[in-house]
Length: 298
Image (cartoon, rainbow, N blue to C red; front, side, top):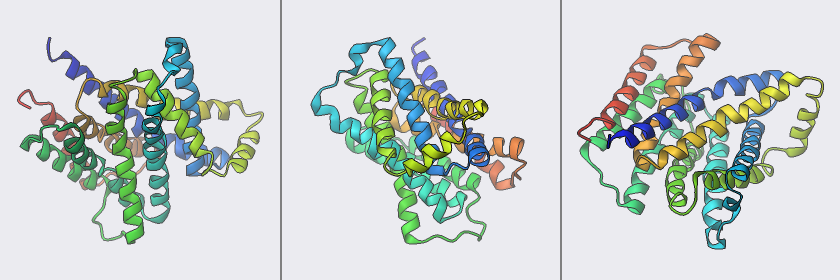
């Protein structure tokens, strides 16, 4: 019975990773159907999420909108420094290099989380956790396909890609701090409100509004737009934030690396992408890291 909270937290994080892994469906769909750019899709996700979490907070607890002024920098860090920063870096990296290299740089996030957790939370770093980090990282490398000799990156591209990993990992760190003071609903609402407002300045807002207006008379597109925000942002971030209440930040970051494995399966099933032997080995590594991390002796 005592282990139930940790088990529930693990399931929440894994489920969030599965939802995040479906992002390719919506990115390709919105690009093909309406010509949205990647950054504009980020804005759509953040805006739908911000409105959704604000409504949830309104009905759950109106008093949850009250935060102390001293915590405004914390929520700016969550929204701008984490969510928006990692999204902008990630999609910029994609435009500068192959998707495989951008993905592996993004998934350096568990390493950033591990280092920051030791400094900020004084979490214990065991040999098991270090080994799980290494195996998980190796799995991400294999799944991404890096090492084929077909990649070409610049120092600037590498730094931007590492920035996406840092921003991605910061959500675990800053989210854990915010949850000590506020409810899950307050944290997620203010995080996405801040991120959405910030995204308006980098998405070419007039062009985005024009493309959305052009969807008039196509209700399926509006439904797809809303579904994009719900499936790739609202549901997974809520699950992930809830999971952070039950498991360590470093553990949660590793569990979330199930995302590239799910994305690989979706690519094969829906877009007829070829799965290489390295992809299979990478998925097995990630699964092994997840099992190892949750072993009863850990």
